[in-house]
Length: 310
Image (tube, rainbow, N blue to C red; front, side, top):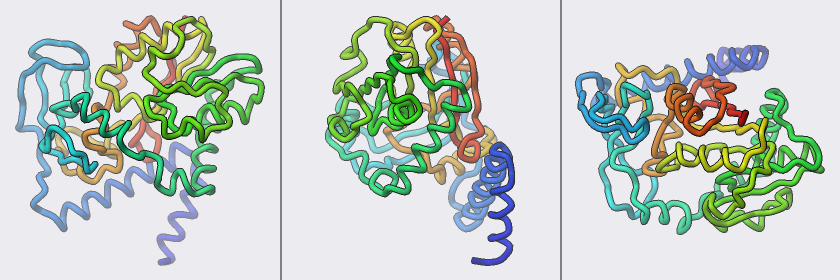
């Protein structure tokens, strides 16, 4: 390893987390610029393509949108469409996929495919890093439930947050929900694994803590999911959300190129890259308090949010 790069990595380990995220963002941004110089055919503009249309996310009619650019499927499919584009609503600031995937596409993605096969899930050391990250986050935010409380993990997969809660407070009752059966028998830290939609989870308000980690970006109507979750929360209960946000430090004038190198661009699985503006509005409509927002995670590529039922 070259000495300057080694020194840079050692320095990064000495920085506070915010500093490390900023440094990673600039490293990724510099890499994107280098790729752009090697591939001048990739457009770097997006500002000039403006359209007016209804926004699916803030439900505003005839609002201005920026057409960021075209994106191709990153999953083998098959899907109903092969050509997609990213749009930015100038009012709610959500970046979303157009057209949205069909019900058949969603079945292909989540029920007919294997989702948890790469090293992040099969390698013990990688899995422990993911677990440690979620454990530290819920610790730092003061979200660890106490013994005898119930927690809900929506779109759970391998139920990392349930596992973190069990690790910190073994007496909690963990409930995981997912539309896929893939991980239903692979999570001994889950007391009750429900396969089905959120409607399969009893609507009684019994949960002190709930989470959606890298789930909300997959939903056709994420605002409805917040309403469904609010109905199942105890008063004073918290909802923890993480999701892809933007390419590192992305600005609309940079256009499509940074998105084409964005590791969280999953087409058509990731339907929307939400914003703080949208989440505040959706939380209010769901009768939830907006408590916390941080879009600096993983080099300013991922946001973290906390909502509370008053």
